[in-house]
Image 1 (cartoon, each protein chain N blue to C red):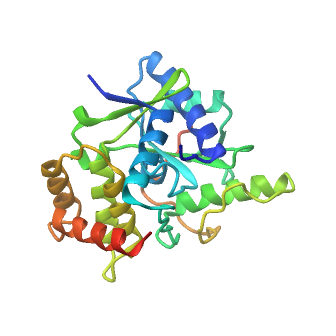
Image 2: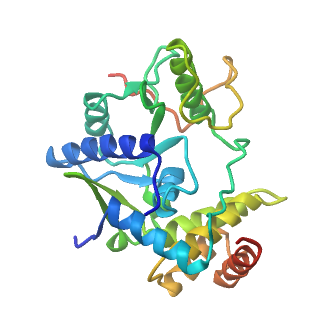
Length: 83
Length: 193
């Protein structure tokens, strides 16, 4: 299949040109408020937070999320990969 | 040149390496979707806490993610579909099923190269439609998602407006279309300097 290809450097330059053309000094950055994250996503973000904490630091990226409830049931989207 | 966050670039490079290895082993190319794809298409302006990877070759990709340094999110005693990198604080979640409910035109996929590895992304039109769908997903709407869609639209080149119109209609159950996106983009470009 003939995919449209671009390097990460070309993409960064392309976006910079678009921002300049728009006359913006910055790009607005609306954030995900975290209220609609799935249970599995919240578990993953909690694992990252705990991993950073175990290393005595705060996470390099702090996502908004409600910590998962230990008793919370898995959703149908989560399935075990164990043999 | 705009700067992507170092941890995004490092995480993307590792994921591209894992994806490339999975493809070389005969797997289907994984596709970066969700917030990290938005981060890519906005030059890092809108950031994401994790990488959502659609894959049809889950076990193969999983093995390669572990090889490049990601850890299983297995705190509950069994393996789920999440991984995280303990140094980068970046997560990966595997997504299966059909890509965008089978509505994405795969001939429009983008292949981004980072170093000597590559990762595929959906066409930006599909990401815009997905954000519009998320905007429409709650009775009171989710304004940040409409704004993200507008930013993606404003920062994109060479959009196929007919395809974009169709995809927005599909992802919003017909409630919104291209004209609504253009209105959001107009408001944003007017209000932001």
